[in-house]
Every structure is written in C-alpha cells, then in structure tokens.
Length: 263
Image 1 (cartoon, rainbow, N blue to C red):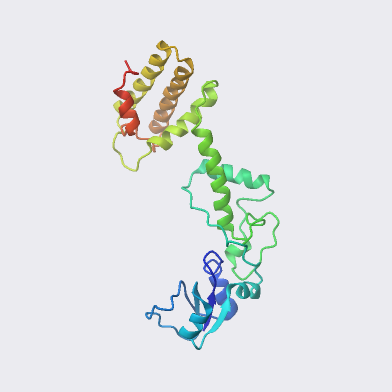
Image 2 (image 1 turned 45 degrees about the horizontal axis):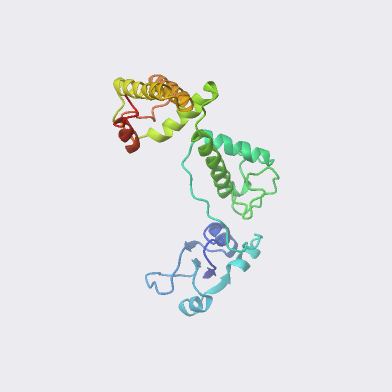
C-alpha cells in the first residue's frame, strides 16, 4: 500500500493514474483523512492525502509513505511550483470564446486541436513543441485550455459589453452578442413574435427620446441596439440561435420603462 501526501494543488489527484501505474496499485482512494475509519484499506491501494506524514504513518503502519515531490520525481514530473498549481475556474462554453482562445494559443505557437499524448496514454511524456500544454508548468492540456479560455473570456466580455456608437456595421454584431448574453434563458417564456415587436419598439423609442433630448451618442447607441434586436429575431426565425428570450426583462429594464426617459 502506498500513501502519497502533499498540500492541495500539488498534482496528487491530477496524476493519480500515473502514480498508480508506477507503484503498481490497483485501487485509488483520494482525499484520505486519518480520522476517517470508514476506509477499508487493503494491499495494492494508492491513498492520496493532505495530512501530516507522521499521522499517516501511525494511521497506516504497513504503508509506504511517499511525499508528492518524491512521487512526481519518480514518474518524471517537474517539481510543484511555489504556491501550488493555480486553479482556473471553469468557464461556460462558447464557440466564439473558444475560437478566440485558439487564436491566442496560436499566437504562442501552440495548436488548440492537437491531442496531447498524455491525454491518450497517461504513462507517456509529451515532447511536442506545439501541444497546447507545452509551456504549462504541469503539462496538463485541460488546465492549459482553461487558462486560454479565461483570457479569451475576459477579452470577449470587455469587447461585447463596451457599446460601439460610431461604427454601425461593427456595433450591431457586438450588441447582438451582448443582448444574447443578457437576455438568455433556459426556458421558452417570452418567445412570441409580439415580445420581439415590443422589444424593438421599446429600443427604437429610446433612440428617439435620446435624439429629442439632444443626446446624440445615446441615440446612436439605441439605433444599434434596435438593429441588433432585429438581427437576433432574424436568427431566432431562422433557427440559427434561440438563446435570446426578449420577454424576460432584467430589473433595470423594467425600471427604465416607467421612467421619464421614455415618452
């Protein structure tokens, strides 16, 4: 029985299959706690734990206690970086974000779609210079793609959430994407043609009110948002995109509908 100990974010769980293969273990038990008596440990187990090695040695007297640093060295992995491997929060999937992430990776000389050999054979080491994880500290393709997605998502959100008022043709697709993100819903409420009619009329009225008030920049923005709503309706009618539900209004939209801005 082998017990590998180390702090969180040191790669114990990430490389558990590689460790099990190296040590000849046939069962893996993760997140082992010394005071958990429900563990029915047996010969051939690989136990992974954050606990102190002395406590683990007392709890499992017949086991071989191995530090994560030694375990990683034994299988040819680099040492754990100071502070551990950073955890990248999982981002919601979006084809446009993935496309931008792939371009960012390509700018670093990496191929987004390339299958890393470590994804198909855990015991092998990847030598490819274009693998998505080639420059990643732990050479984890999933973690590398998540990192590029996080950068792409930040850039994408900034782009679509920054109103374009000068260039109509550039602003409409950006605003259409922003609207889909803002009004998206998982159910079918507010999907009737008259809900689209209401939204388009409301936005056009905001453009007119802003123009009358002399706020040209705001009026131009609302002409773009009106056209973007029409583009999203066209997409819904064409079954190209049905994520936008115009009948579901965010609270600030309801509030502004009753304000003096709309006449």
